[in-house]
Image 1: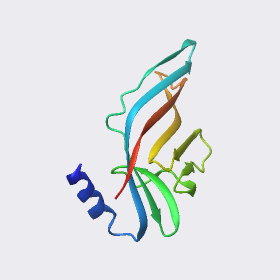
Image 2: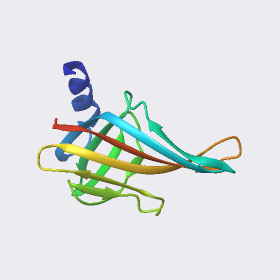
Image 3: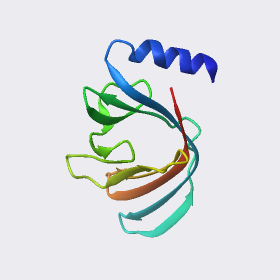
Image 4: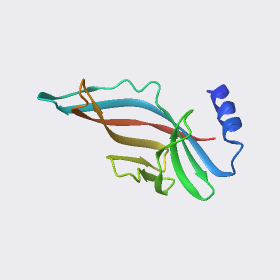
Length: 126
């Protein structure tokens, strides 16, 4: 994790940041419906899910690690974010650093299934 933290600091150093957090998912689940298939649920592999919650010029954003575009761009604080385009999803972080992320996406051969994901993990200040 130390190498990752150093990499993040270097990556984020080009922009002035008041605070930044590395948020790493530890557990996840998914529920799918649509496409004429029954509603199903199961565990989700979130081992590669890492996010950076950062304050860029007074505006909080949540980005997937290594991506430039925000994952959630409407944050009311460093504790709650959603996506301004309006698709389903929300990010919250409590005072102990535990985060919950919910998001919806489309899947299936014809993109006719809606999958709702829930991830939980911890955020550490970087």
